Image 1 (cartoon, rainbow, N blue to C red):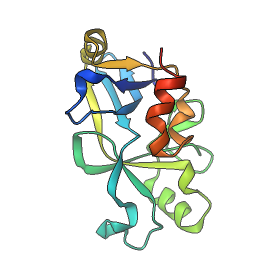
Image 2 (tube, helix red, strand yellow):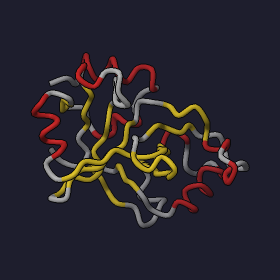
Image 3 (cartoon, helix red, strand yellow):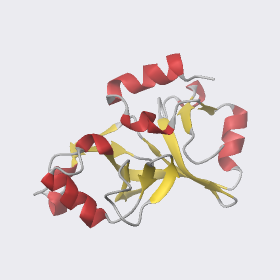
Length: 165
């Protein structure tokens, strides 16, 4: 497994926080793995958060059960947002968040080019591999830019019909 891999939960995780979850892995090393659930919308938009009430309405995603009091972001515009960490191809995490919000508000960065997450998913060293081995998660062959490709409602079925390995 590598950064940019997309995994999907199996029936073993039904009735848990990861029921029908698709996760993009953004970090994978000797310390463990980190990623974001990208196919579940959070019930509020970005501009509904008090500190961003003057921002454009951008969907928020339920990134995962860890640090759900924090906001994380992913984008596909490393040319516009400095300090970004490339996950794979032109898909990035982190960077100058204040600049990203400014670019969203003035229309230079579009809603389709950014994903905002509440929380993240994290695994200690070897933990994700063990969960894949036991059958809780399945690796897909979906490309990293799949995260930005479809409406949320269509993602789960597309991952199962086109990218299931």
